[in-house]
Image (tube, rainbow, N blue to C red):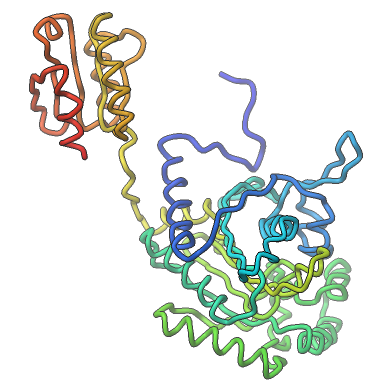
Amino acid sequence: MSTFKAPKGTYDLLPPDSAKYLAVREAIAAPLRNSGYGYVETPGFENVELFARGVGESTDIVTKEMYAFETKGGDKLALRPEGTASVLRAALEANLHKAGNLPVKLWYSGSYYRYERPQKGRYRHFSQVGAEAIGAEDPALDAELIILADQAYRSLGLRDFRILLNSLGDKECRPVYRAALQDFLRGLDLDEDTLRRAEINPLRVLDDKRESVQKQLGGAPLLRDYLCDACKAYHEEVRELITAAGVFFEDDPKLVRGLDYYTRTTFEFVHDGLGSQSAVGGGGRYDGLSEMIGGPALPSVGWALGVDRTVLALEAEGVELELPSTTSVFAVPLGEEARRVLFNKVTELRKLGIATDFSYGAKGLKGAMKNANRSGARYTIVAGERDLAEGVVQLKDMESGEQTALGVNEIVAELESRLG
């Protein structure tokens, strides 16, 4: 047994469970690929200032959870705690916004890192699939992304999730609300850290999960009562477009996402079967983020959906994904000549796209057939010296148990016909 273990708060993905994660990633990505989103991949670490400026210096992510370090060359870097800032940085660096086709629509998949107290559904290393639409201010774009996420979840068989929706206003109306909220918070019995946060970004206090804080927030002013006419109209159009698409949502006037860059539309996907870590994904509009990290004004919107929590949500609902068998054909050679012949046939089958495996290690028939059963293969090819002397191999249907002798040169075409 190895003396090393996965670091605390992390996990290994191993077969057969890893197939679920791959299926979830594919299901989330499929609607995006069908809607003009191109794949982007960014480094696992970035300049620490990218997140300090974009995510927000007052957020828990930056102050408590980010894995930051200094390289031997003196560069201050951080493992990426979220995807939006990295994707926007990459798009700006490559001047994608200057190609004349806005919005720039991108999707991504990868691992992210936050130093948190580990518990079920909350890890220090986690996986997300995300989407960003950069460079356009349009309610239809906000609605599109919410609809695509809903489509992805429903394609997986999820039904018991809820979509929470709110508007955080913009630079015109949010400062007025911010001041009103600060006045309210100053009158509460809050600890020094929370009061300090209230002065820097009071909306973050609304997102505080502690019961002692939430009890005091019952009479807090609501942002919807402070929205300017433009933000009200924008939000109403988002709501109308989502409703027309048959997507159900709940208005949540207290919904505040945990990152500083959000403006106007904000939303969250929650699943009540996951306990305290109920958020399976979320996102919103971030019209000022590009300027925060040194770029031009590029109104944008996006989301990230947690692969780990989506898998947990599927388990909570008892949804069994229909996963393709990793192996369709298993070859069992008995003797050296059979090894050479069947290995060549395995290679031919693989070239045709048929998932095929081989009995390695010169096992006897009994042991090899056990491996064939464990592989989940539909068909097994068995060949020994006597078979080859007659120019045949034995094809066994693992479901019916029926076994047929076929010519060595016929087996590939026969399997292609049966499995094609």
